[in-house]
Image (cartoon, rainbow, N blue to C red; front, top):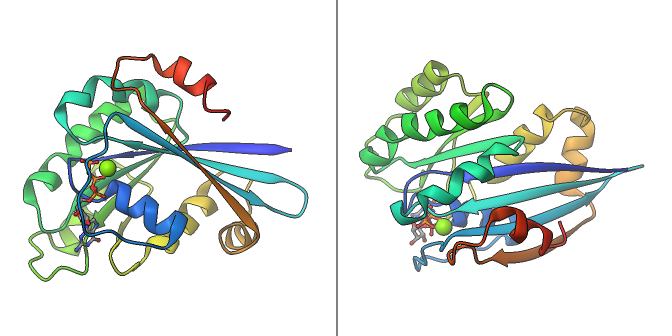
Length: 205
Ligand SMILES: Nc1nc2c(ncn2[C@@H]2O[C@H](COP(=O)(O)OP(=O)(O)OP(=O)(O)O)[C@@H](O)[C@H]2O)c(=O)[nH]1
Ligand SMILES: [Mg+2]
């Protein structure tokens, strides 16, 4: 039996959404910034004892001009990860806005995770306590600080998510993220205004 979980990454431009996914999928980091155009789709398949679990990762663009594409991706997601940059106050202030988008599209029927990324940097302006307090205030399932650059807490982020997913028991979640797995990557170009439904059917997910 194939269980699919859709995870959508949200947050301002340059906070590190793509870098977090790249660290998780390939254990690499690129300091060169290449803005995401439209929406990218990546899929990670994990084989467990008697079932296959597929994490579908939707990497959205933080740039304002792609904002109208995002709600339809939130709509059918199981998990929404809101990312801010711990050295960028504006990105933290915008978390509430991302949270409002999620609640508007999904109500409370979604796991929400708050991630403070770039923990390797020294010019931190948002403290861990502030991150934790905001996560509590807006009702996130959990808060975590990460670094896509040195990998700090990136596996832990996905492990914690897996443990919260229905039908995935704790021990399986550990194995799912450390065991036999395969990775597929697909990039969907939705910047030309292609409806998401069409894109979905063309990506064999
Ligand atoms: N020092 C440090 N730099 C990071 C980290 N994560 C990302 N970066 C850098 O920040 C820049 C933006 O990262 P991206 O992953 O492209 O950000 P994004 O959120 O996907 O941006 P958009 O696609 O425009 O929404 C890049 O130059 C990355 O190398 C991190 O944990 N630490
Ligand atoms: Mg990106």
